[in-house]
Image 1 (cartoon, rainbow, N blue to C red):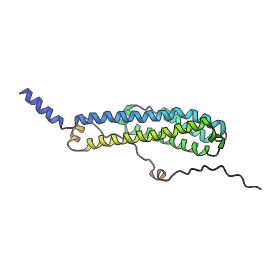
Image 2 (cartoon, rainbow, N blue to C red):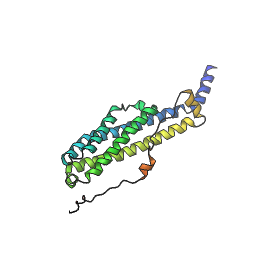
Image 3 (tube, one colour):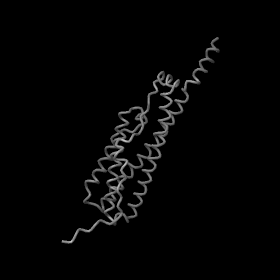
Image 4 (tube, rainbow, N blue to C red):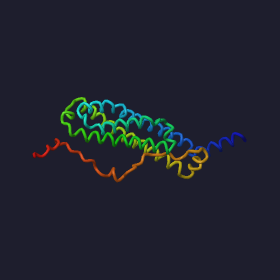
Length: 200
């Protein structure tokens, strides 16, 4: 009789989505680790980039300080796997990374006014690495977003939502666009030399 109950219980559990939750949860963790890996790569590149720009653009202190402060703010957030289960901490992490992205964008726009800097091999290499990292961040974030979407659909769909409630599988936070209006405006990139001051 006990064997029959075990078999029935196994059949019931096999259709409840428990194993799917385990698989998708592990996928989210793996994808999140890759997001953190790429953010760390960018974090590590910034001091070299700032020091290279400093040599050419001493007067751009505000921009350089902005990048340094944004990087420091990112460094104060403990980026752990547990972050993906805490919507508030996740939002703080996302906001700090967004500030750093904005600060770096300003830095890159400022460097357009320094032709000698643009021709410097070290700066070009750092810029290429940073651009490559931004692309990798985008890819890693997209993978994470897709994994979270699949997990959240499973957690909300019947009958697997019953399993989610039974085992406390809550909805995972995902990346959102904080200011869609700002993102929809394409950045202005001007590769021309700075205009000469009008003759008096």
